[in-house]
Length: 333
Image (cartoon, rainbow, N blue to C red):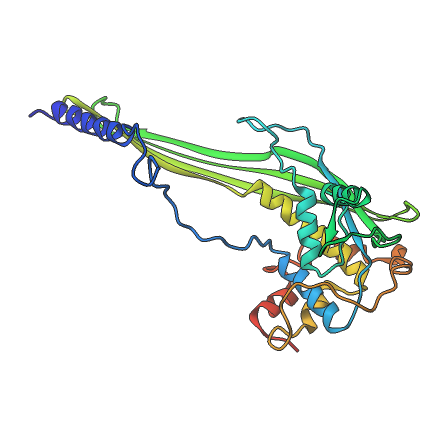
């Protein structure tokens, strides 16, 4: 058998296997056409700032500090960008990410993002349609706690290619029958930006504004060989591509912003909270906390807030902030 026939036989076998894999027309005994692949377990979804948020929660609980009540409003996507496959390029769930971040910091939350179920139940109760243990549910005045502050804003930047670089290498002899090799490498950087503001719910005064951006990196590498093998043609190539998750970058920016807002509420430096927390004897659960800061005066001295600290790229980052790293190692003073 010539090498050309061997190559053709190999291709025919591959096509036959593909046909076998897609030839099922009826479900099996379990009702499935195929068994799904993959068995990775469900894991937590932290960012490099999650541990600093947990530090704040532990510190506030241990020192009996109370945060104001926070409501998270609409954090919209204002980039207007769409993905190549269709749909928005940036997550539409930024508000949900902010709610999760405040919960990690132990901040007291009141629901204002989706009140549809509560409003429906109140309407049913008002029409005497809902009861508790056979008794009509009573609607009492002032039964719902109000928010002290609310967070609004949105994702304002998505720049796909703020810098890119690459290299292409092609090598081989001038003789056509000799092998030719090719190597490609690409790198590009993009970024996302976020603008948030915290408003006093009673007065609608904007008491805090935060604007952050995060850069995202992508890499691509490939290599291949092309050659004539007697009567056959050989073309082999391979490579890989990786892109830092864009939506996780959005979550990271939101958690950094929530870290700064939460620290201001508690009147605590995030670094100090991690430095003095007790990771061995203290609790590590995420719970709401009571006692402490007066919500009416929390932002009374906001004009003197430490702007340099907020601009520090190391602050609150689990791999760049020494205090958070010390907390993670289990060492404390």
